[in-house]
Length: 241
Image 1 (cartoon, rainbow, N blue to C red):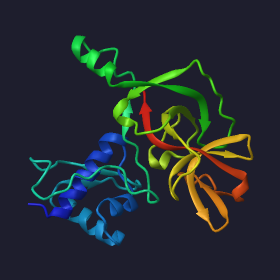
Image 2: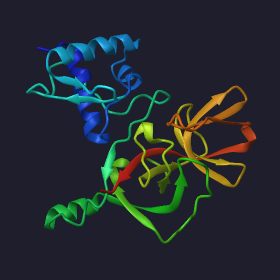
Image 3: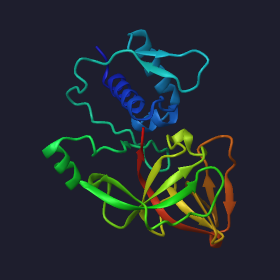
């Protein structure tokens, strides 16, 4: 029998693995369970290992493997944890598989088409070094309408690997809600010096703006407030297999 926190952590890890292919970081697990320290996560993982629910792969970072889950994936009083931690802590995309409509038969395909929205696809955006975004009004991508909230949206294809630690991979299509503001810690499309566009996490540091990568190979870039303009905020991701 698992404790409530053990069960919550196990389900969170299992869902994260299913959506991204790799296990969450200790910071993401701490945020998801609203714990104050990583040592609490370490104790929960150790307990789950001892009970045969988890296994750690030796000599590999972020390499947890779920061996089994409880027969009932939801227990009374257990909240339904999402895989998206709070803004400013981390981002784990809820990946929607592309090309979801063509193989559906009859009525199922019609219902799916009705729930899909066509968005303009504006070229490739760098998730490594900034590049100019290429606006191609002739390209579009269909996404589930449930992915979108109010406002205008568009899509960009990711180029590079600087956001790989939050599950954004080269070739992914990111869904952006157009806007010129974003909260601290949000992942945004940022226009730098009016000619470079990049996908990074936004941090405000006094009178400066930092654009953070999610890959230790890339340095954080810091600019004056007049050099960076927010073009939109990341709200979703589509991956084609």
